[in-house]
Length: 319
Ligand code: ATP
Image 1 (cartoon, rainbow, N blue to C red):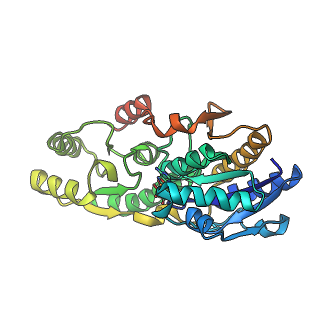
Image 2 (image 1 turned 180 degrees about the horizontal axis):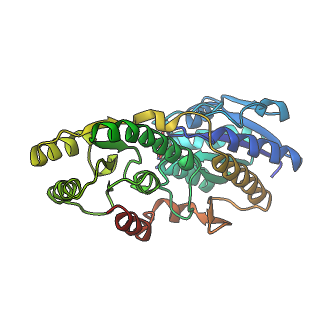
Image 3 (image 1 turned 180 degrees about the vertical axis):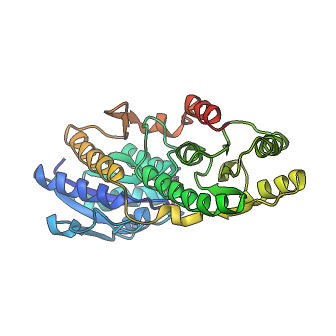
């Protein structure tokens, strides 16, 4: 490859900018030309590309969001849209593309790869729902935001002897709830991967209060239900009304943690090196400290395994 492009697609996440910076600077370091595509696949089919130089990615490593912006693009779901994207890249002499996004974005990259564009996917999502990588770019920051919020809720809960239900994001994946729940000492963690019974949750909470517990935190992943539903059930069964907090999009914003910046930097550089080696149609990830590529077909057709060991540890420690 001589010339590559980079785009961000789907939902944004903290660290996407650090990944864009890494792709651009690593490509320039290796003597490639680099283009930034504005607004994901939408910008691609609108031919909204601009050359990126070293300075174009200055002062962004610490910023949330994405300077390239992101979009959801219906037209790119059609073979005509995908062909148009490939034609535009080819007309500009671009033979490689790095796509930073979630699994929908990966599928788009896969289509372009089948049309002869060398593509690499980088896992950019707070949800940590992409398999063949232990962590996605943005997850660590999102978990830190949730932990920080729960710390604050805990302060006021202890003063008032109350209970709290905190609804967190993650789509169909319970990882944000699991990691944030464990890190903040939540009493109960409700995730879509593990069946639960709210009657049992309520009675456990009652017993714990009888045994002197002064506060109780229930973290519920959005894929397992809403905070409101859980709060209503607890009120109906226990007669105490928990405070319900829905954290929402603040989980996706703000400055990325050093972990996300480093992961984004390493993965961005890795993706460029893989393209230079001629690899294509792959998703990049980190597994037990090693950087790996996996066929995108396999990535999008595999469900990420849930870390039951960590879940059981959280249960054991929350008595
Ligand atoms: P997140 O999980 O963070 O929301 P995502 O990448 O999964 O991110 P999607 O909206 O699913 O978000 O996908 C982003 C874009 O990727 C879509 O708007 C569309 O343009 C493209 N895309 C999604 N699925 C496909 C597909 N099957 N074929 C081609 N392109 C696709």
